[in-house]
Image (cartoon, rainbow, N blue to C red; front, top):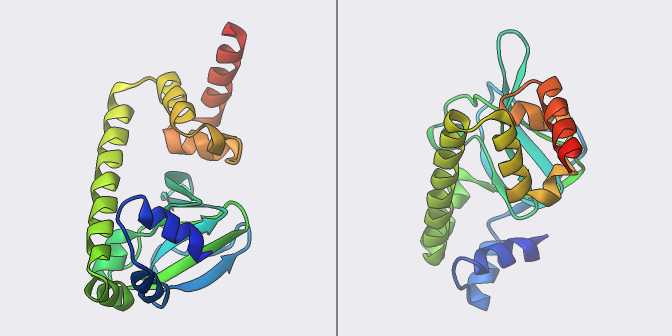
Length: 193
């Protein structure tokens, strides 16, 4: 499990063998079964979570009971209710497993200790936060400026391997469209080919 994390870290910063040993000591493994919660809205998010294997989703549920997808997290991704993690406020999001998953968790206190013990990890996390902010800005602009079909095509283009793993109703929710609209888009695209 930890090898996937080290591979991800090494894509952004260089870790010595001594750094890797130190980093490993701050994480704890966790397994989730499909549909099992990692976090429920209203609870405090106590961990940043790295997905070593599997697929998770972050979403909230409105007053009508409708789910609104925020993020999917698969191998090599981090997932959390970051506001809750940093502030200790109740989480706004649920996080659960779409597939059986293997995770690495780090608590807030261990996160702080890690960045002090292995300073290059502070740079690693800063790079992640910058990339996350860019991704969120692009998603916001896409939701404002693109049609439903364009949003779907962009998602397929950027994550072709993941589309096959995510149920269509969750993809529709992520795109902010009705499942029937997504079905219509897919039929129209298939017809044009």
